[in-house]
Length: 411
Image 1 (tube, one colour):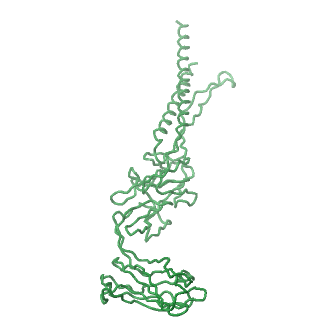
Image 2 (image 1 turned 180 degrees about the vertical axis):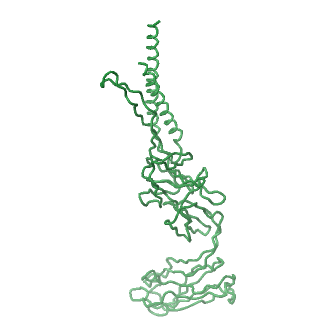
Image 3 (image 1 turned 135 degrees about the vertical axis):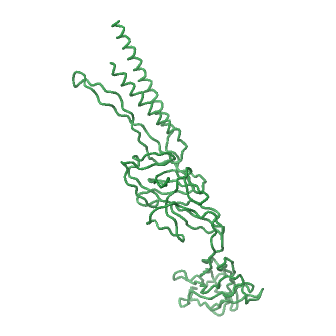
């Protein structure tokens, strides 16, 4: 009979621990990336009393705690650097050189440009070189170019897509413009002039404002190059047309380096960019590979864990890639606070790579993963645990009354 004291007390202690677990789950109901835990009970060794068929248990052991890494809801957060994992895997962070793992993707940047968690751990990944990421190398701290100025880039080639009116009379003229940049980031407007010379033939000339050149005359266009475009009977550019058309822009008044070997690419693969059909002459698109100097305006997280820098010129440049770790038995991880986990002796070796590869989940930019705690489930557990605690407390009071009755028999 008196073993019932320890049996009931073990149950009260176990239920009290389980209530602590439920309380911690409810406390982290709004913690991004939090994974709820559940208490798992198991009984203690039973004792045979008189015969093998009469066994008395010794109660319940302290419950095991198992964390459930089920998917939390993905919600748009509006945070430029927020990231959410859809599927398996963890973000990799470093705390004083110790590698840790987290599902919480609410990142931020410090004054030095380090990408950090809200509690200061450094986010790990790969830095891009000229917009290219080598994910085959070792991971390291991600540092974004805070306050950086994007250096200008002189135009080396440009394209023009459009149509020249096949029904136009000989001598008809049409022109359009293409903007290019020199080595100082100063823009220059090229004027593309087309004049119909004959059936299926158009003469062209490319000019730049005279004031843009030291040898030019303000208000008078300076010709840079000229030639003839020939078209086949189907309106396509004659395959014999030499492409690209190359020319130089020398003596720039801005003081920039000469634009030598500037290329006008007439083909997109094997298809001519300029056509001659019976429609009005018009440009449909143009492009060039130069840029002006620009200030960094924003660094944001894109889908796939790509870190993108946006400049005042409107150009986006890839500056980094988040690393993700896949761990086959995440339940073995040890929670160390700050939404982080460390591997334990029973954890499988982390497999680190890019999102969406090797069984790793995808990353959604501008979003956060919510806690996977279900409030209804936790309240249900709380009621059951409270009832169990009260029932075992009743056992203690009952056994106490029985022991008092036994004592009174002796006295």
